[in-house]
Length: 112
Image (cartoon, rainbow, N blue to C red; front, side, top):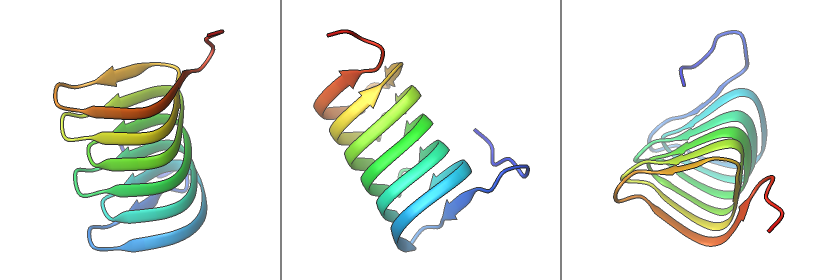
């Protein structure tokens, strides 16, 4: 997922901490720490990145840490260094060897 210049994107650099409510029409690229509520088309959490709070996106890619409430409407990819913990909902899931998924899990579109 490359940063698209046609949409507003969010870049949180290494060493940066943000806290609040964020509505991102494009991609949220997290290399630092984000706390609060994050809604985006795509969320990309690097190996340095930490997202704590409520996160909702069509596509979520995690190489760092996401925790609390995560909704991936289309796809959730957990890289080998990634860890996702909390209340998790997704349509499609891929976990690379070494990646971690822990919590209350809901498959979107599933009746059970």
